[in-house]
Image (cartoon, helix red, strand yellow):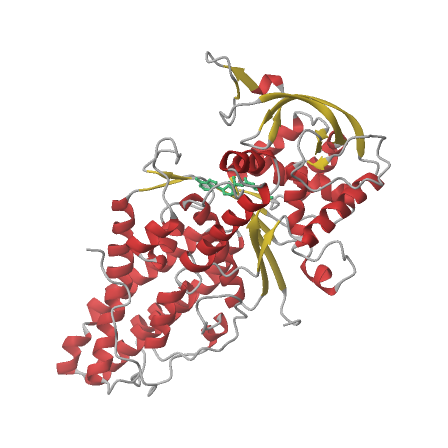
Length: 531
Ligand code: ME8
């Protein structure tokens, strides 16, 4: 393992105050696809996901349900983990709960470091707080509505006046350092439109940030022995301080000398949704600079998933549970749809018709039919084994080269999380392969030129093998079935952990070719139409 390069990626950690919906699933799946791709490409991947259990929101929901916050968090963390494990096949390496013991240790350690840096002081907070967003708002960021209630303008959630003693983080003194980071690391945040929003915000000036609360107790206690100011009150950390620190906990912090930490930190990629970019692109690097720790290499901000163009919400009643989708369409179709339908980084929408359209045209027709037809012909006319090709013609070489070029193209696309681009190109090549198959018409060659028929079937199978290798990341089960059908041996080389595909074939297999004489299995329809 040690010789493989490390790749450490994370999702946002979900508030366990409700069951996860398809928007959360979108985030888990996209991170899972990235993790699988990197494993297949020879990286030693560590993939962290989990739950963000502290704060007023979880405490209030628990009160309403007559539970302790920990009971509520445990119930919903289990539900979320079940969705990861049983519904979506997410290949995470650790499901972190911010109530885990090592996370308390990590959160207190980063607090210590920020105190030591002189960045924490005691003062009084007076302002507007949105429990739903777990976030403070300045008065000019709020609006008073006719119902007499004040709301955050940006997120449309109710805010309440909050006045309490609080520790503050000197965020204001990080403005220049952050702008310098953005200037020197243009790859730090994507997509560019979101990065620009962040930069504009920081250019507008930063205020110090309230980072502790005293009016409730569901949080990581602020270490008492600290000398950042005298107080008689019990402070708990502002939930976002401990939440962001989960990424360090997952890498073995505070044990900075450990092999694990040295290997895993800084994180290669944080995947998050567009509503929490400020926390990840401003607060988080500022905390890390203060603590003297290396900064993550990249924050990728995905868009929101909407139901037929409408925001999902409980009151509208259009919230979709991940299991409802996977039962209706199949897991691999859902995964494919979410990554293929709209560019990663932009908002997207789903309808039943759109999912069925992708399933029937891209999967059943373009991929499933080609696989089924070519494999059936091999089974019937080539003694059930990969045929021996005769000399390759130009058209043969061209289509194989196109399939071969997909590896470099996909690597590049995945490097910037342009999943849709990799899939778009892959399906373009499949389109070319379908055209090749139709033009060469091996069913006609069977009567006129059997050697040429065998060549065409070999070439088609070879294109399918390369496509199947690549799409393992997106559709692990179906791609594995296709590779099995083609008689491709697992090389056990993909270092998968907790993965539902037990026999991945790493991208090293791009250097190989199908071996004539290898038995293929009786072809089964792998990508059925949605009826
Ligand atoms: O924000 N479409 O948790 P969360 C796509 N605990 N993504 C969506 C979505 C939608 N409709 N709705 C939510 C939190 N998300 C914090 C994170 S990280 C240190 C702490 C995304 O449960 C959302 O953008 O509200 C976020 O990335 C993730 O789901 C968890 O959201």
